[in-house]
Length: 537
Image (cartoon, rainbow, N blue to C red; front, side, top):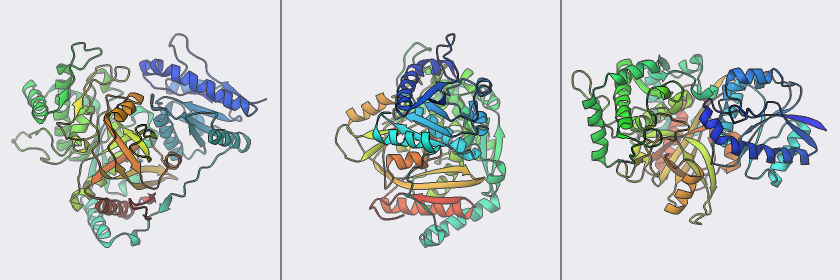
């Protein structure tokens, strides 16, 4: 019987690997059964670790040791039911000679789909050939067919005819004109993208090579999280308390407890308030138009989570932060923040901010994880509804009721040991533009599409939260002309950028303008799906 090798990559954090192991073990059993039914043997090439109580690869060092014993001439499956750090295994996959298949179970409970999409984006950037599959049920006909194709032919292809090359000349003249003006400004005045410690969470796909970024007129200011930590300690208690009071005055609800280990406390939030003030001042000091905080590795051992800070930065209405002369920094405007220092999202968010400001559209934008999706159990709609979910960096502008409709929960302790509050809410109904910048074939590329955010009954929203992470902000999104499987087959990232417009027509114009801007600055642009009315983009 022919052997298919299997590896399972994991988190860098032991607590996350231990918590998520049961789901991974069940997935591997089902996958093994599917491979056996096709006449092959699935062989795990690294053991369960009794001392650590999980079987994930937990570091790049460990990954290199594992791949030293992997046969590069035999096919390999990377099975993911959890979030994973791509750099743990990227080295081995780059040098692997036989077919590679990435597989995720269709579940929102632990972010395996998110982890697989990140790995796919990283492999794409690295120029590694791979195939990918996903399914709720590994005995389902579609999965079995795809698996058998890969086992016999070494590759499986997906239909992505929803993707069309963008032709700038066909964009509305107003979109072309606005895009040209913004592009000229980038080329003439330049812009600074502030990066707090590059390379967060193993996301190789989230690092834009400098030489590709230069063509856009955007340059990196490489900042240290140690500087952010120090600056946070220099913010006075009085300033932190003023930010906290601003939140309370706006109606933000904090779910406080007393146990620092498991509950949100006011002390945690006050440290987040200090980090917010420090981040705004550092952005201003270095002239950064947008910034990205890494947090998870580094700051996680020093400060509470940065997500309340990130969501506040992305909001148009923010607690005022002053310079030494008393003037308010960027009053009435967001300071676009890219979660987890995903530079592709940072460039996208910068473009979005410029375009939406020029068009008089809502400026507040954010990335979300493309976390999961499901049919609506309440039967409110017969359309497929995505769960866009992120750890708290969504702006209050996006939530039903704004600040007053938002609340803050303690971050899950398995990811965030020192706690910290989220900025949670349910995304309001409206028309959005979604997009993603990525690197492929040594080029910067951008995909854009249109979608709507719908309202679901509270019971269905709660079901979706409980299936994912209930402490985090959620968006119920329906993509126009892009099915679940088309999105999964094409999307080269765990993240998806979103921004609202005032109407469907204005969202179309914003999409065309951003596409024209990206193309003007040298990106290869594709449009995905349709307009709201079903017409071609």
